[in-house]
Amino acid sequence: MTTSLRGGRIFFDWSASLVLFPFCSYNSKMQMVFDFGAVADMAWVREQLRFFFGRPDRSCARTPIGQLVKSSISNRTLDEVSLAAYRRLVEAYPEWPALAAASTGDVEALIGDVAFPDVKARHLGDALRVIGACHPDFDLDFLGRLSVAEALAWLERLPGVGRKVSASTLNFSTLDMPAFVVDTHVLRVLGRYRFIRNTADTRTAYDAVMAAAPRWSAAELAELHILMKRLGQTICRHGRARCPDCPIRRRCKAAATSDRKPVGLRGRNMDHRRGPAREQRGGWKE
Image 1 (cartoon, rainbow, N blue to C red):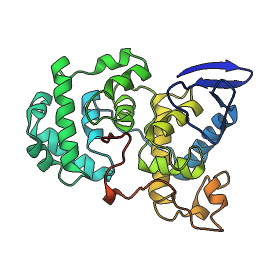
Image 2 (image 1 turned 60 degrees about the vertical axis):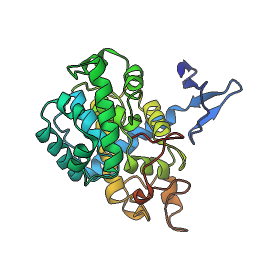
Image 3 (image 1 turned 30 degrees about the vertical axis):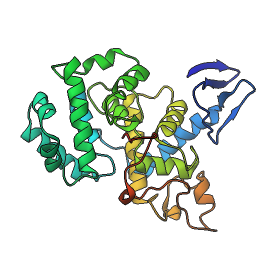
C-alpha cells in the first residue's frame, strides 16, 4: 500500500485487495480516497470515551518476547484469566529457551483455562522455536529499528501470529511502536459504529484505524484500544447493545437504528464457542 496527499485528501493505493470503508470512495485508478472527516471522527470518539470512562493508566510494558507470549494466549479470553496463565508459564519456564523446548502438552496444561489452549500451545511453541533458531537470546529489540509495517510483517511470518498479536507486541511492549490493537470487542465497536463493515476482519479494522489516526503515538493508540475495549465489554456488548447508555451514540450508525430493531452483528459470528476467528483459508491467526 502506498499513500499520497492531494487536495486535502489522503490517497491509498491498494494493489493486493479491494477493501471498502463507509467513509471512503474509489476513483478510476482503484485508489481508496480517505476523507479527513474520518480523522476528526476518530478524535471525537476518543474524547467522548475519555470523558465517559476517564483516561486509563497504561500498564508496565513487557519485553517484546514477553508481550508476544502474553498476546499469543489471550485471544477470546478474559484478561485476568490470560494474565494468570501467562504468570504460570513464566514461573514454570523462567527462561524463554526452556519454554521453547517445552512439550505442547506441558504448555497446554499450564494455560488450560484460556480459550483454545491446545491450538495456542502448539502455535506458541512453534513460534518460539522459530525465533530461537535465528535469535537464540530471544531479544526482539531489533524490530524497533524497522518500520511498523516491516516489523508487523516479520512477526506475522511466525506460526499462529496474526495482526492482533503482532500489533500488541509492537505497541504494548518496550518497543512502544504505533500499531493499533484490534480485539473482538474493538472489532464489534468499529463495526457497529460503521468505521468498518460488519463483515470486516481484524486486518481491515487495523488499516481503517491507522488511516484515521496517522500521526498518533503508540500511547495514544493504546489508550484508544483500552477505551474501545471497555465500551465493548460494558455497553456495546455481543448480542444486544445498550445504545441509550453509549457515549458515542450520537454519531453511531447502529444506535440510530436501535429504536427500530435490536443492535447485533450481521455477517460475522462472534460466538467463541464455535471456534476461533479465521483470518485466512486453511488456518487461523490471532
